[in-house]
Image (cartoon, rainbow, N blue to C red; front, side, top):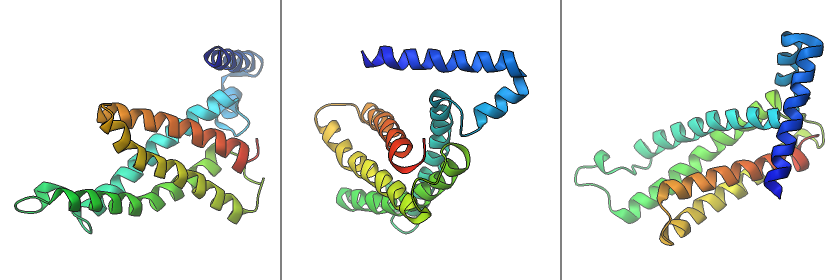
Amino acid sequence: MMLFRLLGGLRADLALARERLRDRGPRDTLLWLRSREAPVTFQFAKYAALGVITTLVQVGAFTWFSHTLFPAHDYLVEGGIMPAIKERHAIFSNLLAFPFAVLFNYVANVCFVFTPGRHSRSRELALFIGISFATFAVGLLSGPALISRGLDPWIAQGVLIVTSALLNFVCRKFLVFLH
């Protein structure tokens, strides 16, 4: 049922874009699709693209921390690293990388996806970070639970990324920013 509603919304947004292209031409349509007033399907596409870049920021910061401050890879230490220390260092590195990724994501979303102004800037940022941290914590804690129940780690990670992206988008669109 929900899939049909999503497909119907996608079809309506594509029809709206085609109509705009026909009436106003390609340049105006591209400007409109890049704007914050774009239909939700195109907003989500921009949001997802920024999510990929944010993931690269997170992974880059994690890599730096897990190779410098908190070694979490066996090849960094002769004889390897004890598993408990490796796990703890990976968590520390993720926690330190999180602020870099969330601040980048906030600025990028304000610039390209959502319209700020529903709340004061400080409240908006606090809500944005709170929602981000909640979904990050769920992912950090539920990954091992899914894996221990037999799910392949890559599939578990994929499920968490997709559900986190959808939940973050909905919360940000309807709770943090103007819509």
